[in-house]
Length: 234
Image (cartoon, rainbow, N blue to C red; front, side, top):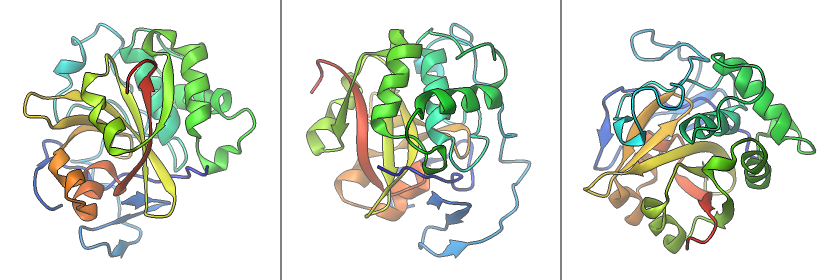
């Protein structure tokens, strides 16, 4: 399943989208779906590529990863999956992959090589490669089961005991990995979006009523395709 991805949409550090609001390849889309080419990074809004997430135990648990928290950006157009893998491993207490502690960019590339033993790295990372990597390198985070992003599977996300990798994309193809960190009391999800490098908030009303532009404004792409839930969940 190709998961070639892109940079996230322009970052709004404290943004919470609760009513109607892509990133793919090297381009982003505005809320009307029009392609915007060659937009420069905004130094006041985007963290540098490869900025490192906190080590496990630093700054508290996932509940303290509030909207706008910087966890680190993917280093290129195909490392959203590895970014999610590394952040999941760190938050679960499994540490960094290999001898790259403190260097998020190097950790992404290491995780990408490890996860894509057969699948071409230029096409991103598959759900099964993601699951296999987590089993080998972040056992504290799982085990995981690959599930299609059905209504029932998405409803099980808030009960997950740890981060939930979520694959999103267009209507036709999966394109981008994000990481659901948890759900707040009002039901909204806190999500790490690697294109921006920050924690964002998704109001599930947007998913339920099928508002693709608004969902893409948070997750980078409008449609959930698959997710990794801890085994034994829904």
